[in-house]
Image 1 (cartoon, rainbow, N blue to C red):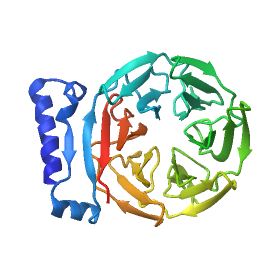
Image 2 (spheres, one colour; image 1 turned 30 degrees about the vertical axis):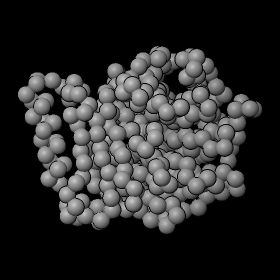
Image 3 (tube, rainbow, N blue to C red; image 1 turned 180 degrees about the vertical axis):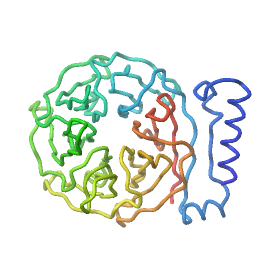
Length: 328
């Protein structure tokens, strides 16, 4: 931990000496590398970790939103904030358009050069709306609405289709989740129901790996108790079927998940914002990695190249970190 503490101490001294806020310190000042072999092994069980570094901050606050990668760039969308795009080559954010309306906790995913922002909540009302942002035209248009209005869902794309999975369907006064899965066909401009997820939940994460959709964590009812879950379930779009996989070591919701080199990284979460765990889908096993250098809760996550970007969030709505895992 010596290198971690040293890096964080240097950052704190920079902020204190300059009188600036964290977002005003140059991004390159924030770099955390886990270099001590003995301490790294103690913290990670001998598993390689990687390097965290600060990326340029967002121009406006983003929390309860989503981040989507399209053509090597990252788009921050939803939650009523401006649409912003980050170009890793230029290392800069740019504002592209205003949001159409407030929709906290939507799902978002890209089909080609169109980003679908799905569902969400506005003043405790769950939404079935679908807004489509064309990254080339920089304009919004309306899409076909969901059959089940929901917020705190996940959306992913696979084989030219869009999937809306799970979410919250209550009014804020009750724990009421859904396992509903809907598949969107852009050619037909319509949604259709698919096999429901066995564990109804919200605030979960989902990724596509090995031609399957992996749904991780969230909040729901498990073993007769309601709260953060460690349940991991895998959906096969070809056979419209589900199966249970190895549970995540740390049950949590409002986390982010991303895939690099065939491995799944589960990062952050509400009350567990420093947690980083890695899943090997071939072995169906999890491993705990070193804690992140900052908390991530209700944030956006996207992958470009060999880096995972953690974008904004409730803890620090303009902060952006990038994580480059070391290969095994």
